[in-house]
Amino acid sequence: MYKLKKVTNNTIYVGVNDRQKALFENLWPLPHGVSYNSYLILDEKTVLIDTVDICYSDIFFKKIEDALNGRPVDYLVVDHMEPDHAGSIRLLRQMYPEMQIVGNNKTHGMLEGYHGITDGLVEVKESDKLNIGSRELEFYMAPMVHWPEVMFTYDPKDKVLFSADAFGTYGTLDGGVIDSEMNVEHFWEEMIRYYANIVGKYGNPVQKALQKLGSIEVETICSTHGPVWREHLKQAVSIYDRLSRYEGEEGVVILYGSMYGHTEQMAEAIASSLADNGIKNIILHNASKSHASYILRDVFKYKGLIVGSPTYSNQLFPEIESALSKIETREIKNRLFAYFGSFTWAGAAVKRLAAFGEKMGWEVVGEPVEQKQGLKADKYEACLALGAAMAAQLKVKN
Ligand code: FEO
Image (tube, rainbow, N blue to C red; front, top):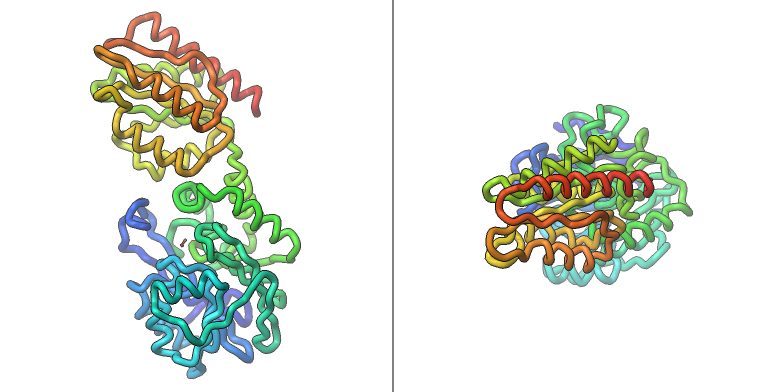
């Protein structure tokens, strides 16, 4: 029934779109949905690369049956065990009991832990090959390119890399599957947000994986989320490369909390000064309104970060505390950092922001501004000076 899309002559897309889930990992907003990609290679043997979230197993199995036209699944290659991809494995095994499951030793431990599967397994290690007829699939370990068991599968005959979460993005596939069949512009920002939310902590493992890929010829990347990259492959790889090196563009995120607008006035003054000093990318995030998903995206994207917080019960404003914790978890490096804050009777926020910047190992720019109660002329001038100092340092660093 399904008119399935081909990635190559022998590789068929059998993934699905999730347009219903509000939050990926029950954390990250999905305003444009997400795809769970799975691919079926038809050779003398049939090989399925990854499965999909169990909520979509029904349509997934129907697609596989149509693509197989009566043949069984001989091998399931599991590049990643997170349940958005591995959720349908147990049901798939029930449908195809002879199916061999290919993974590494870590994959197999998780297969037992999640699905109770301990037999019919093929264990592969770095650079191992699997002959499936006219081609030999190759396997490259990519530990911590999200989870420790992650590996990449390479089809040297068609020069296709199946890359698990790497080069993935939020956003459904609205008709086409391959990037050349669609306008991909809206995916780039969502790719940065996906990276910042999901993969962001693992910059070094991503760099190691990218270096490994330098030794193989890749014309097509089949990630587990988002378009198949071919025409725009270099751009997708370059975004992951830049983000995993924690390189920021020229621009500043001003992340602030404010209960009654006084700290916000300081943020506005700093933003105005940044603009007067030639900075065009200035993003203000009110921590009480912006979801952390978007704050993280922009902190990954831009080199400058200025954080402002009122003192709240002798602590940072709770929403700032929460956002900073997520930034810290991702071990974001090489940011230019400045900070400011306010208080009514006892100041604590500014010294806590100073401690945060030190913990992150970031370069502190300008003189921090601490304001008691309403904004006064001298503090307003100090905010302008802080913005000017950040702008100057950004110009030096870029
Ligand atoms: Fe898309 Fe780490 O799973």
